[in-house]
Length: 278
Length: 236
Image (tube, rainbow over all chains, first blue to last red; front, side, top):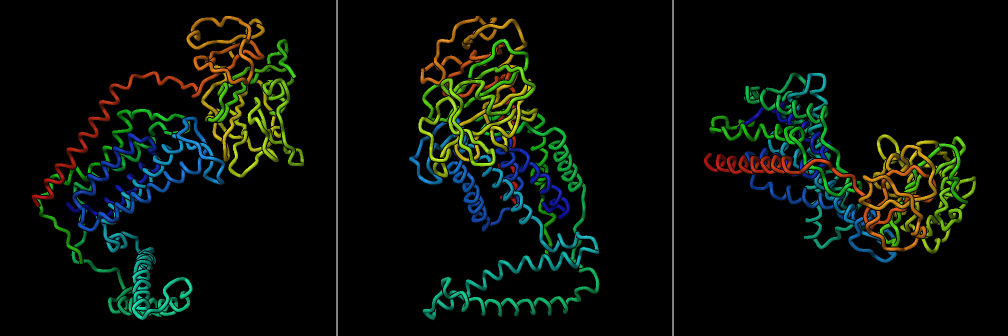
């Protein structure tokens, strides 16, 4: 089922707010399941590496917290006085790091869903006229980063084939061709924009995204969830103050469940609205 | 220094939380009374007399910036220049506000405490950990006829506190895990000594049954939705 890009943007803002505000592990688990539900209808074959990366990133706060924090009352073990990592390793630090890592995982998940469901061109098309040109340039500039990395890898591979250095000592030899490649691509972009009449008027679209009733339902649910979280926030959780989190009530879980609206509506999918991407 | 039992009714609650490796009484809770309108944090520690009756050991960094190095005889050996190695544990002081514990940002002589304040000292590494959640009313109850001293054991919190003589030497490593002594005590001085490996927790007050069922039902609902979505996607 295809939702309007604006719907996904509003839903993502609510999901991100939930990821940032709710540090209760019970609510985090519920939100993770909601995100998985929202992502399932749009999953792709090559999406697994992204989740692997997210899980790796989520473990970093756990490692940092438990290795560097000396706060807490529940001792796991104690290391001798080694600089930085020496001292008492506590359960509180481990749980606090896990909570932070989970929040990071949820944020990455929300952005991954937005990336899977909305094209950057659709987002740019949503911008008001004064911001349209700037938004287009910004979107193009963002695409330069992965393309520059691809170019760098190609140049390094070419040097390896020729048995030449590719490490940091070869940086001057790597930077020059990289700069030339990037400039060349920028010129190609400029020519292609010119050929498509960029700047003369707003970009035309083969099929305009339509804001349907289901979009209104998802937007209403997301806004209600956001308001719910702001007006009646869930009890904060800080592992250093209390290791055992409080079980969430109806208010906390209700705010999270509202975010499952896109997943619930996707169950009514009949295959009649395949995305037309131009 | 000793506690002024018959001073006027300016009272401050003092909580001293030892580090995880401390073998003795982990948590010390005292209600201190003084006649002045306000006293410094260092004077409060001196008034408590918990460093074996001696003033707390301090290190002067110059300019009046005094750092407390030893409270209640922890650490046994004071490190060089108070802190020792970079990652070494140290004492940090905290002030209880309406929002919870707030760390003090000045030295022990850089602030004053007044009637009704709650001060906490914790021994930990880095920038310090807040003391356990203890309210002023849990330490200092409404003023009553002065008594010399008392020890209130767990389980007797609902009964009127029975005046008794302190038998636990202050700061000793006596294993008294059942004594938590967080019941309010009106009498100032050495009346409350808590001892436990873990800090006291406030009861949640609500049975976890209905919220647990609600959370379980939410997870089942979301899991069912996942299965349904997977089936729909396979069909299409």
